[in-house]
Image (cartoon, rainbow, N blue to C red):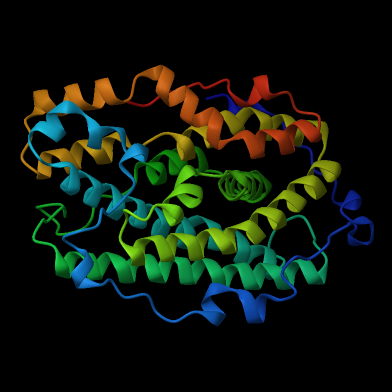
Length: 326
């Protein structure tokens, strides 16, 4: 990647907070946020035999003929669900809350208004709760299911692939370069709109508790989307040409990392339910042709792309993928 070759020229004198225009959408947070207003979600055991773990249309491998013919659809949907929850857990704790904590405590090179910093504290609480209920549901599922998807040697769950890919970009970065990487990766993740948040809460075939927690998450994320959309708008006015070029160069990787299905995790899950390497490769290849992957990325990034277009960035720059993963 060419990220290291771009000169970063920061001028802190231009970052005065008196010129920033921020309108908070989190004024009713104390009454309306999930962490403040909802009881703990408990999986209903009586639903396990009659409900799906996830919407199969959102998990192409679950409808592959090999899976259907072997009667393994529910096992595949179960693995996808625990992968989604682990993804949520790690994303919120490891990345989003790193950024909200630093914004809240003025640890970045840019300075934001007090009300924007206070809202960052609120989002930190939200994201911690999303990680908590993801782990809570994960443990409930593992106690109720006889299928073990943990890594045999360590007993740990399979790590989402996005973590290692993000770390490859962020490793060895320091100071303001790292500030930009952390901030704009999270702006990307928080302004994308996934089909999971839109469709699963409305799918009555899915376990009630799963629909509820994803619906809870979606409600909170609507406010986070607004916050990070405004953060993008504010920062884009303040950054230099060099800083903007640095971000634009990395955006395709940020988009790909977050939007592409985790095929490595799928391979692990399919191996755990007893499929051969040949069957796994066939299922993955036939369920995720490149045209499908490109379509998914474009669908999920419409909102983020619009935000960058309003800032004057062509969508063509945002989809110049350098390193496709399979």
